[in-house]
Length: 120
Length: 318
Image (cartoon, rainbow over all chains, first blue to last red; front, side):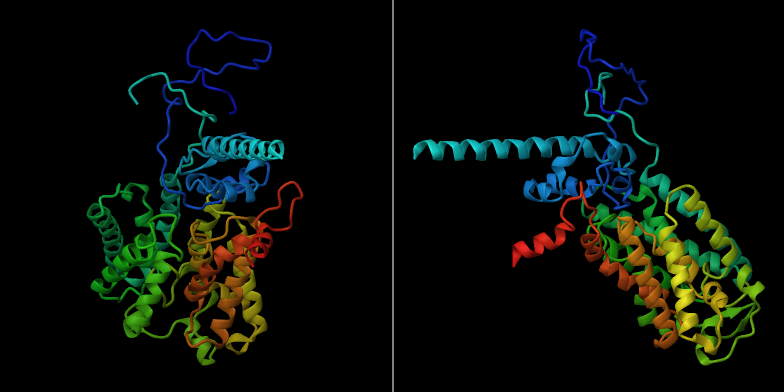
């Protein structure tokens, strides 16, 4: 569930490779998203007790403050929510983006603070 | 997708539980109750059901066509709305009223708020409430086998014990709406949904238990009758099929307990002291509106973190 998609078959198998999945044509498709029906299956499945649907809405709004307030940075990207979502929403993908955006913001803020201190 | 190489984010597998499949299972579990309703209440019930379904699907299709949106009639949610609305109508209702109710449910309650997943109250129940207020006589005229009479709940309200035996209540041979009378098949349908994990047991069980216990304690009907509380009126269809509507019920387990208890409390209060003999639709509607608040209060704690982010955010704003 957490594996990376490989772009070509030339990728070597290394020590850290725990498995290779080859999916059939039927399995390897990007499901079309439909509207969230608030069923709560993602909330039930999340091992970190997050509320994936709220986090997804936050990322879509680019409201990263809300993403952080709902503890989005604790997402372990296991993919259980996206697996169970009846509306096939790309939840894990959304959280990867959200976490990257928050990390980038934090790095920027840290750099600014550092620059300020050096200017003093 | 024309290419065979798909590079996407994990997870690369997906459960076969889709919105359409969920709605399909709900429809499947509702069909037997409708058949029995038609059997006891006459063939006209079937026409009302068909009219509601056709009007719901057609108005959803037309609305999305007019607004140049992608049509969502294939997810079957409009069929479920139409079916549930029809099950909440008396079989003698004029067809045009049923059609008006369906259009109200789909366009005003569902699509004005943004379509599937965004409506704040259950469309079928809101439409029923609208119809009950607009056409009170047509909505409360009951007849069984051609003889009109009060429903057992109305009789209880009037202070008499009623003449319907428990067995007739159980199999649905009594006055009432099309789909709410046959307790046996509604319970079986609900159990099927719980078995298939479409709904959880929390909302129906807590809701039914709260209503039965509280209205018995409130001495509704002048006697201790928790069984007839459960078997009459719309409690079973409400608890299994309406209160559990995903969009308008809380997402967390704790929230669902609070919501179901609230529904039960409101139903018992309305049945005992309210102006209407039946309180299920209004109590679910009232609790629907409370759902966003319940969801905020019952946000799960992450890593033993702050008790509720809700209080933190409230504090930050003031």
